[in-house]
Length: 525
Image 1 (tube, rainbow, N blue to C red):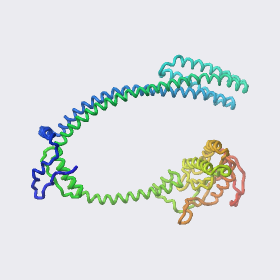
Image 2: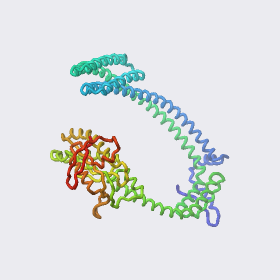
Image 3: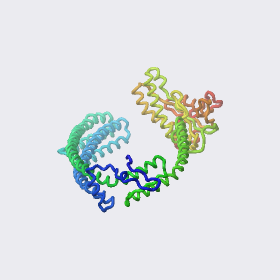
Image 4: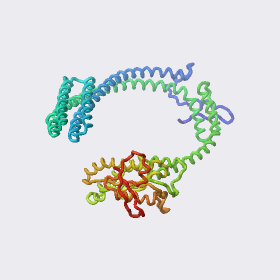
């Protein structure tokens, strides 16, 4: 806002009347502005009267909007019911398919768990029929009775198959499953697919119903908005000019304060809220003169804190490159550094990937690197899950150690659990890699526990946070010696595991390169 008010003179005299009357009020509005200004009422009373008229218009608009919203709520509820109806139908389809799959597995494996799953799927299907019939929207005739009838035949066919299975006639049970039970499942799927299609049509029709309501709401909003805007502009202009003159004097004073002159003081003729406001501005200018000096000190302290936080973030970023997030955060928050070398008992694990070397010879580089990165991503997530320190990637192998830099009393258990999780995850990952590359990807894991040297090792221009020693070499030899999918551990690692965690068998005593005495190894079975 541009000021047109001359500040108080140093000698205390008031500005000339010519300066005071330069207020910029439009000529046509001046009579109404003067009339409102002369009303004996507080400023908030005048504002309240003006806003009351606007509120009436807003209330009417709100009522119209409420009616439309209530209608839309009903449509939303109907859409939600239709969505639930569609979801239930899809779950019933899944239940039918699952029963057929479970039956096949029960006949092929003979395990009773699959029969239990069939019973659970049948119960789920029956429950979904009852639930969907209660909430069903639209005219679906005798669909649910027909589904129950077919489901009863489906159950009878299943009883015959189970009888043949119990009699030991697996081939006969398989034929009965394919010829009767499997065919009846298709009879159940057909009306369900039609039911889903009808539900989707109802959803589309319901969505179209929103269009009319939206058009009506837009028209109502436009009409009431124009009326509200016109009234608000006229009333707001009149009221605003009744206060603009003292505001401009205060604005001039604040402009002076913004330019750094904290000695400026103002005097306005108002004996209302603006008189009190001018007093507050004068007090503020006095306080600002004192606080400005303090602010410079605060800024210096704040800059120091920012620099400290930036340094902390840089340390955290560096640690995250070779530590799990939990370990990195703990080290940054604590007082212990990671730079000094020391002797410590660690559990070291090597994960040796088999299959990528052959894959690199028969695949495009992009395909081979993509598969390797996918494998390393999954394996790294498992390392961080058990708060292991990821030492390095050695080609297509990983080196991980536990119990440093943070102590872990169960470091051997963490290493073994990590290896078990990796072998489980590799089963699913191997399936996807096989489909893409027609190559069998496996991994051998070796774990050794003992005292090694750990710390920053390297040159001033290139340092690695790593572990070195016989047990590191021993873990690497074990990984090389492990068969695909095998986990080999040392006797010390086994002794530190809680009872019952794993089952092992002796793998003999072997003389490995670099190890002076025969070492007893154990295979996790």
